[in-house]
Length: 456
Image (cartoon, rainbow, N blue to C red; front, side, top):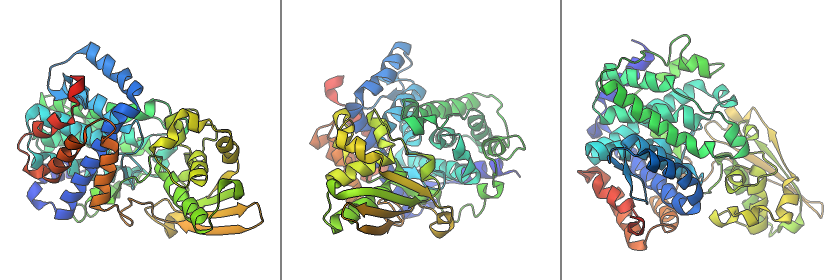
């Protein structure tokens, strides 16, 4: 039996009753966190939202699922397209560490859209989410790190996650789930250009992945025959998308742990590889009571992933600034914190920040991959204008499984984000509904709260 079939059988047999409590709680935390990003994105990235929403409205579609905040109903695939894109506009959503991918945006968008269409209960949707992370996470681990040389894994792996969740929600058997996963892998795309420059394609990728994942499952459910065994095939997904694929990882110790538990939530609205440099910077300047005017230069020694991304010294847009380690570190040094307000265009254009960005450098340290596995570690060397050299390190970003956010911190992050677009009373109702997600009989009970009635 091939690896794709083994994964499909595992997904088919997965049930809510077998999931450990901590896995269920993790899934609910991801759903809440992801929705917070989408709700805030509607207000903070409204222009980007309308680029896609207006097009989908022109295209029409059966009223199967709801577009967040706006309340318009369209087909499940198109609702997931808009909602998945909306979620990623502010780059504050989760990261599955082994695959370096934002799986929450495409998966939660898929689960809620298709779940609304078929009136699925909460227990099925949580199970589908966990299954999606399991398959996509394992595929990501099998193709990293060389996959990241050219591809944006949120897109390439997001479609596999969305397809897996969709197949589970539709109740397809093992053979068809294998075909859905394979068909989704066959349609995977998304280049990492967007990470270097911060254009709209980065936000679009998880939405498009959700759309393709739902389409793959619905096509197979109609009777189409899809590929089989495409993950491990000699010219299939893993071999085509990685210079050194590790096929064994696809099924190794399957069922003994859950990939969703290796997911990391974000404490800062920036690219994840910037978080340990941000933390190290904040720690040093606070301990030594420094201001940006006191600093000569900052040098970081980091896990190799970081220099391959996030080194834009001339960001011009809010998204590009969120993806720029030099900007994020300079901003942290200047303000003593990192928050949503620091990514306005007038902030990005400040001369002091632009000047200091050129004084921030990164050095890739391959040994960190073994010394600090499963994280994006950073060692800081900060030089002051009076000649001091201050050193420290930050290994686990806040939100990492080894440095997790508490349930109260996750809720508070959600509140801060959701209040950009919804009233306080509704925000608290959403939190309560997610806390009891497994008791939801029809997902419409949650979806109705995700609409700003003013926009209907």
